[in-house]
Length: 147
Image (cartoon, rainbow, N blue to C red):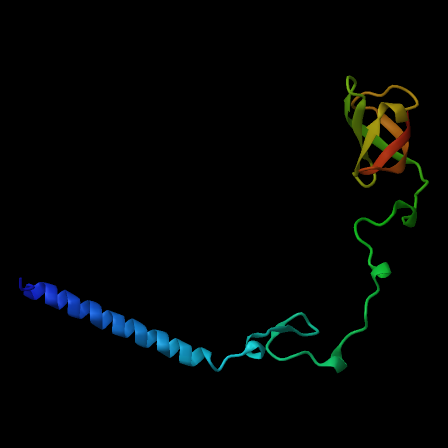
């Protein structure tokens, strides 16, 4: 049985596409033959920029010792402690949970206060005098007393 004209045309187109695909593949292979591992390498220079040339050993900075690197927050004993009395106003206090916040009058900084650090019971709106101490989560008011 004879193939129709359209079938022959489709077969010709398929054959032509295969030839073109094979030619492109051969062309890519020819281009890639010149590249080697050195051509694909990338380097980081002394400024942290990615370049294609190896770094100059003369520009290399000094080595860093692992002991000199400090990760995280500095230890609290390295920070200065302040021992001055502050005046402020209780902006919030929850009697059920036993904590609140005091706002310093001079710097308007808010300090956490717990009822264990109060010398007498306090409520919202009281004017108080207090010292500060570094707690787990920052500065907190201690030795709180009403004025």
